[in-house]
Length: 155
Image (cartoon, rainbow, N blue to C red; front, side, top):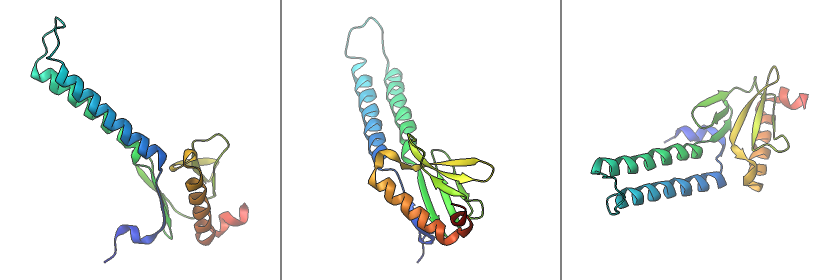
């Protein structure tokens, strides 16, 4: 039985930022739930109700959900092209539009070079992942050399 991921030769996701995002999200939930529980226990001169406690816990969960969006980036490459999913959406770059992959000095993540001096950020390949990022770039360039020979000739 084939799955949608069977057609991709490379699937890369960020590692360090994913771990950090999960830790921060957990911390936000723990802090907000702890604050919500402790709202009624102190004498502050303000009367907190159960709805206030629920709201405080909900705020923590919403903030954690926002932070967890940072775990979404992914890049997949194969014969169809390069599928780049950053925080909100996924776009597939076909090989005829691909002009190269670069990692500018000081950049946080790689980018795909497109025609007319445009580019698409690839948040899945991040500089803080070091060797993992280097391996992903090398593998992506190998796949590009196979499926986008015109980009290889212009480099």
